[in-house]
Length: 366
View 1 (cartoon, rainbow, N blue to C red):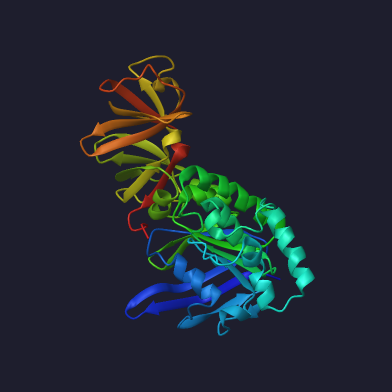
View 2 (cartoon, rainbow, N blue to C red):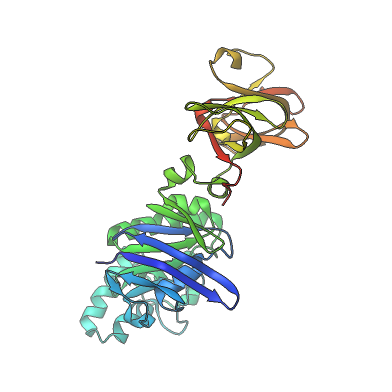
């Protein structure tokens, strides 16, 4: 068994709280990512699980065993860091086999396991090289091979791709996902990169201010964020503020600060007059230039806001449109294709369906 359970774990650094009352379950064989901004507690959580830090309160269980008081070397955990930490004077084979030698494994077993690991990370021909003779991506794969060579129960990775350039990082994401699936090893991964988390994870745990805010699959976090922080952190989104006019039924009427009235999906009964924050993802917006067919009025129940196209940003398979609605409100729309018929400075209309709107009552921001 290699699942992980944190029970009401708290860690302080003097007066500063690193994590507070953290409860989190990681399922056996799962790839779970700790996601959040700098200082949110994700690396502290990882180091608590590894045994490099000890909590003031709470328990940490790995495979059903309480490891809270155990030193790192007795927890059966492999760890990969951002800066690789390969031994510069040892060859690739010697680096990968280091943990096995330290544990007294027979020489033949070490050779066999090293060969298996080199095949796993697709570097079978470089066993005799030194780390300085490898590229960044090769060094990272060697570090991963070393971490899993002795078959730990749990693999921890602390922003291991942060030092790589974008293309290499994307390629390594594919490799990490393949290797983790091949091993079936429970993996906890730390990153502040939402796209990386979405690419790799079975589930994501979003932290903020040392607290666990929400845990879910990438789709769950994106489609049903618990609050405004999660909605903002796991993707691009437009926020609008307003007041409830009619909060009865599954769809509510909201008057925005600029006077526009829209219909939104209601999470439950809403009190008329309540201040709310509504949000819509850029890809949910439909944009019209002037009044071509089909006009937004022809789509029953479609919300619409009029504005001026302020900026067009081409991004290959999609285009970002920045639409100025008022002096203090600009909507971001994400549309496919070239959209060559749209020009900056011209009037446009943005529309979206009520069911594509998220809503939180003020006070739900944390």
